[in-house]
Amino acid sequence: MEELKHNMRNLECSEARIDFDYKLGTGSLVRMEKGVVVLNIKYNGAYGMGEKYDCVNQKGEKVVNEVNEKFCFQGDKTYCPAPFFWTDTGVGVYVDTCYTSVFDFKEDEIVIETPEESKIILMTGSPREIVSSYIDIFGDPDLPPEWVFGIWISANRWNDERLTLDQIDKLREYDFPASVIVLEAWSDEATFYKWNPGKWPDPEGMIKKIHDAGLKLVLWQIPVYKKMGADEVPNEQNKLDEEEAIKNRLCLFEDNGEPYRIPEGNWFAGSLVPDFTNPQTYDSWFGKRQYLLDMGVDGFKTDGGEHIHSEHVRFFDNSNGLEGKNKYARDYISAYKKFVGKERVIFSRAGFSGQHRISIQWAGDQQSRPEEMKSVLKAGLSAAATGIIFWGFDIAGFAGALPSMDLYRRATQFACFCPIMQWHSEPDGGQFKDLMAGSSGENERSPWNIAKAYDCPEFIDEMRYWHKLREELRPYIYETAKKCVADKTPMMKPLFYLWPEDKNVLNCDDEYMFGDDYLVAPYMEENQTHRDVYLPSGTWKHFFSNDIFAGKQVINVGGDGKIPVFIKLKE
Image (cartoon, rainbow, N blue to C red):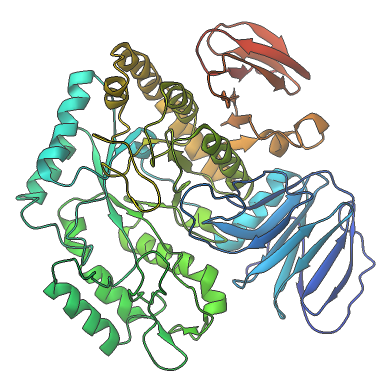
């Protein structure tokens, strides 16, 4: 591990009890034995731990740091954890392990349970310094291409060339800007690298039309050699891929020598899982996908990665299933990142420590319910506190019944001031009908379909305003992205990241700074028209009304139908 700036110490966990009497910020490390670290520390807030949906300030919480696949209402589960946190009193801790670890944030101490022989890296400084030091451990983030900061459109129902190209016509018809189109149901649903025959007569020609219209194309991926269902048509290439994977040990195996298959009750049950620690797997897997890049595909939506459900799994690099529970997501996303290079993008939901280095993050699966939007904002703020620079979510959720117009309005306004602005929807009828039914009829979360569903054509004009505003902000967002990469700081900055000495912001989970200039306070309640907004120190100008406000106070704003946004004026 390279030498890190700021005040850091590397410590090795062992069975022996070790006492430390040196000071660490405002607290001191008092003991470390049998994989248990106890920080005796005075603090008011603890932040980070990856993308956390249940709360932002972890004080009072017991956090199990483990990758999980959870369909909607994530609660204390997460797709993208990280064994890293920092406090308002200038202390940061990273546990250098891929094993599951437990962090108990008590009143005056923080207890960390780690596997033996885990390296603990302790940091001190401001939140900016600590997060930057954490980023340094893994390496600098890459700056995505400028087009990433336009508007992303996505729907699982676009499963043929006609439906896909129809979206370009609809963008023109309704006068909506967009820069990325995401296709999920493009493949044969057996290999996940071959276009579905009969549905896409000319993929390369279609991609050229997408590019000519000013959009980029991102395709969905999943890391499995799929087990075909009894009700599915047998696929010869799927069979050959599985035989190759087992014969050449391209997939994961178990201790008993049998190929590891995803257990029943989990997504893609019965499927083999590629082992990306094996260089031959990389060559085989991406050799079959290279033609997609050659024909002009601009990136991949790397879904899944939460597929390790047994401690008896063995990897090519000799790691085991206990490590792989978390490590696999990173191995998988890192392999795709290496494959696509810097000019294309990876858009992922699963990950682990160091996620800032390899992927743009999206918040995963949420229902179109008001309470889900609250959890999404918490996830975005905790991801930012963990150093994840580029993040977004599905506007108003992608699953279940269509969102209300109010939820769609509030989520669109919120997304306008996020690093990634995207709407996405499941297939017509619902993605998992046995878990939850989707809307009858067309399930698309496009602005025009929401307007059609509620028989409110003027809603299209209202939503167009926010899409056009996003385009106006796009140059600022890209310049901000460049600065964030250079400075190793998130684009969405929780208020406690910038003002840790201000006790009024330590539990703030519904406001944030977008870049260095905009304070954003989304409406979080259904049909909410006004809300209290806390303005930290400084002078602030309302983005829409131009009214001026002094900082260090709570103000009540609203009534104009627009998200509260304030510009921080230069001193």
